[in-house]
Image 1 (cartoon, rainbow, N blue to C red):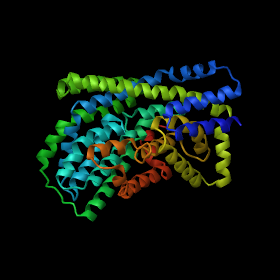
Image 2: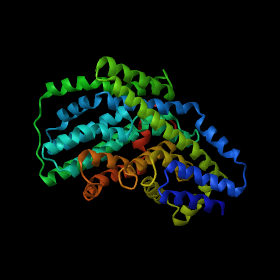
Image 3: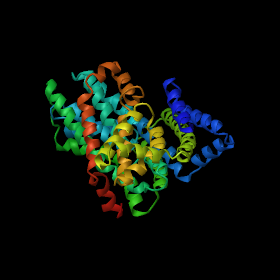
Length: 430
């Protein structure tokens, strides 16, 4: 009965339009009151969930991404991408994919990625005669790669939601190949649609311009290399790497590029504080939720239900993907990771999936949920920039979404995409 109350109140609050963090907290409170447990349990679980040193990485990574967004780094990355692939059929679409991938590496946030790249690329593509729905779909889907990059704070959230079973360093290394797979799948989709619609190719500016734009963008792109090199060499921990990222980003935007203004710095700081507050609230209330799920053995019950459908690992993984995708369309990434990891990670591990590989599966599924409504965060941002309705964009979403689902299948059923680099660079034994 307690589990029914927990689930019914949670989904009931979501249907009523209550924000996810409050829906999680209120459903946990209702269940605790029904159980007759002391109300102090609520506050104990919230404090224990937020009072973890590793969580310091979250505000730093968020702040670093906001500084990159407001510091003028996007323009240099766009120019590099345009010079690299702009001469191919549908060149601006291809450039958009590459630019979103590169900026996702320095921002670590799909929403920041679509905000920065969309503001530059969508108006540019419309001016060059590309359809608005194409420009928006390319931007919003390619931006999802930011969730897999070393600067992604969602990796930190997953590592801690996994209860210490996963190395943050291994996750950071593991995300690189899946990010490349996502980019390649999106390039194929963008090219195929461009050919079908007859979009023109641009002109190759020459290798001199390519190298010049690369030199201009390199200081911004170095943030990924600094984080990876520092963690792999043992110079600093994954948590300390986030502080290094902020320090480097401030030096870059204030003194190297000299594009950061005081007003933009204040905007970046304010947005980082707001995002961090939301994420920490989610972590606190999700800890209560996780406590109750552990108390009622939700993971074991879910595993038993799945085993009745099939005992084949490939079918178990497919079911997990479907469930995570559906939940991800209703909840924010952080909430989905915090709630679903304790349930599905033990099931996936029992079926033979490594926790690092499951982390990639989780992050891609959660990123996929950022596009379709009702959450649709990246889609709403892209449509607002493009001046087009979500419905018009959704009508032509299939090729781009199919590309991302193809990438998800590669990561789900080919472990090497997630595990090869951690094993090569870190000697990971998983």
